[in-house]
Image (tube, rainbow, N blue to C red; front, side):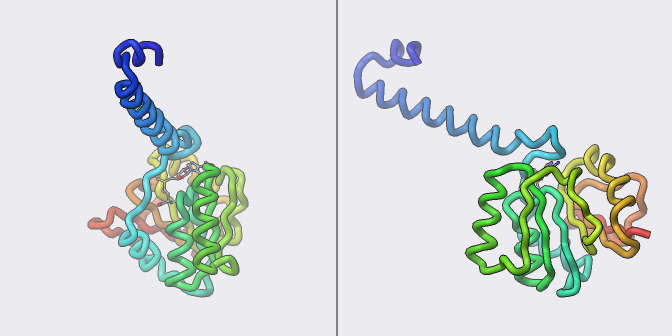
Length: 186
Ligand SMILES: C[S@@+](CC[C@H](N)C(=O)[O-])C[C@H]1O[C@@H](n2cnc3c(N)ncnc32)[C@H](O)[C@@H]1O
């Protein structure tokens, strides 16, 4: 700050320097918001609305399903699962701000009967009730998730991954345009 005041000695310049600091701090805060969760499994990058719809269409989601989105971000997948496909949905998200944003969306859209957002690490969440699991994480995290999914998900459960694949599994469907792979637990 001192250095900036030395560079901008009069008050107009100080106002300019305050703005510069505000912008630097905002950019840093936004960067941290985007990537702090990367060591847990993935940073934040939302799936486009079109892909969200396609992910759920691929699974044939309907009102009989319970959709789990692992790393649910702003809640767009669980909201879409409930609003358009009438499924029950559970989002698991580690970032408290994204949890807050998604819970707000769920309330505003009157979806609280269908959608639950868990604040926590999905590696510690019991997934046995899921009939559909959606992920947009990283190759390494998918690899770490494989054994948990195989241990907890019931046969017939559909797993859809955006971008990253599950190396040891054979997809039953692929949407190359949207970069989606779907698997069924045997
Ligand atoms: C690439 S974003 C995907 C968000 C959302 N699923 C979508 O497709 O729009 C990954 C999200 O996973 C969250 N995440 C990463 N590792 C996690 C973990 N171990 N437990 C819970 N959330 C995690 C991040 O905070 C981030 O919001």
